[in-house]
Image (cartoon, rainbow over all chains, first blue to last red; front, side, top):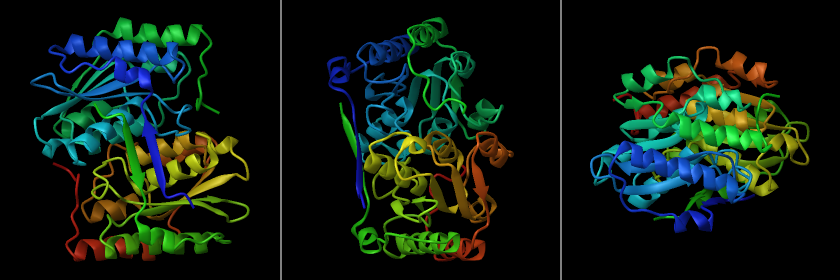
Length: 188
Length: 188
């Protein structure tokens, strides 16, 4: 019986590493670029995310969708970024980690799984580009998400910023669909 | 910037490995025992899960809650079991993997994150012991889960079996709470 599982970022992600992104638009522009490159490099779906220290802009981790590459249906961009940040800081709760508070910047609004992961992660802010409707429009199933998911995060003390550079982020989704990219794990 | 993250089962789990569990009660009894031992061994919270081939009873993977031990807020029992099974089979979609169909047997009904993970995993059946209400009763937040989450899984073609050996499974939760076990990532 297998006892360990690993997720490894593709090599090209390290080549795109930056240390600091001062503004919200800088952060989203970077994440959308990673999503685009994840498709063009053939490493996964059109999704990317980063964990960033809100006040300083220090980039703590990045993630891209690696579901097929890593044979791991949980390897959504948000999940990868959150786990890498926690591993780096040695703490399962980013709200208790040094040099915070931290935010999760993601190119598309989270699916059900990633929504739950955001709640448990300790980030205090969620910043999204394309909407879950944009993802559904090209055939991705976002899962059984409650319609009031934004309010559910706010009730837990989190801030949510939506539609940041949405046209750019949604453009990556549409380009992926137009090029015939696989819409895996969609409705059966 | 960190490029890899790993989840490793504690050594005692391997010592409890079994190859085949014929009946639904056998499967739940095994998972509930793992949840109890995860607490008594000091390796994590009172939750365990397993991915099992429904027709043959072959145990493909097991998972226990490793959030604190692994400094990883996504390391819920269900997430660990699903990822280990997929890594073992080399496939992100258990519905397309050999020797299936597969089911996820979990000692407690899934939180929001694990609910989403179940949808993407390719398991065709979910088997639960204690209810999400039992988890909430000792202070765990199950996250922003839609009230019709069972129907949402059924609409996606999955079967859901609830309250299998619920008294045993809920007893592990209550014993954990009575012993003063930490209820991390609960409501803030």
